[in-house]
Length: 519
Image (cartoon, helix red, strand yellow):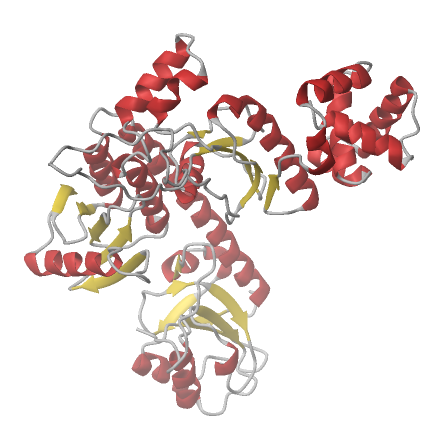
């Protein structure tokens, strides 16, 4: 089998599955014929070169197309292609060579490189086009397979016994063994065909590599043992759990399917942050029955501070339960709301960070009382968790707030997300109003804001707030609100008319900004 150049870093493949050489040869309209070398090869891309030694320009996995313009030493030429990791050689006959040189055929047979005869009527560009078309078809098949697997795993996660159900479905989808292991290699749950003892032992050792018992452990690892493909993935949640997989073959898309299972198992197997599930369920029931946030705060484990985060995918793709759950897990919370209307943001509730450790027992053997939401003299108050940027997401966050002010924090986070999208920032945190604004009593400030902004409808007020926050930029405001820039101009012009003010005046802008911050 061709290998990568000595000392070279293995190339990263394209974002498409490899194409079996047999599929290209099956395209009768191309007229390709294999005349030397093995029948099995995987094509990653197509490259054309008439250089005497194309080795420096190959990444590995290519179908190299050539008419042999500078071919003088076939044995050396083929050896360099094999050393570079080329998958196959396509040789075009005429006008340079009337037939494929016999020495080239012998060299390809001897060194194990598939050799294809390209007829004169088949341009090299036609072959490249055919390969790209086959790659597109393979990509679509892979996406359909991953989508079906995602749906099956999500259905399994909704069962009464979600962890065993997800493992069983994963083993079915991958055609192998799926095991949930502790950091010490103890089996928690397993599903699928059991590998031979040696492969099972190798899988356990691989799982210890990613078990997060020491700093710097990788999040995943792969290996092979006697024809069995082994994979291990560390789960989130801080419990050191590992998902280990053993399969007879490794197909394109398997890593994506395994990644979906890792997210689900991380959410299902990890403990809740702060209070236990019963406490959170009780809090939800009481709020549904009319209790105030202040009354249920102790059941949540803390009165705060809490941070509300609004998030959107940077690529514009809609979020689903899996991607939103992965975002929540990366932020250290399971409190995620992704079941909203199309085009709306994902909402995340981030609780306080870990509190300082407390003694588990008091002198005389009396058990310590459970942590209370209030602090005692000499104790440190719970520290607010700090949101940080997340790859692939645009985030807007409120300032840390008590549980009684979450509704206002939700609106603040929505405005922060709009600002982040408009300025192309990965994260915007809306800091609390301070400075001179803090000198005005909140009741008086709110009354002044209501009177000043009374002529404006909610859409106009929201547009004015966004426009002022972005320093009067029409384009950025349009991006933040998802409207045309002319709509922004019309709304701002209407605001000026209804308020009877000159919005180019900095004093006017300052007073309006102060008022809008109170709403």
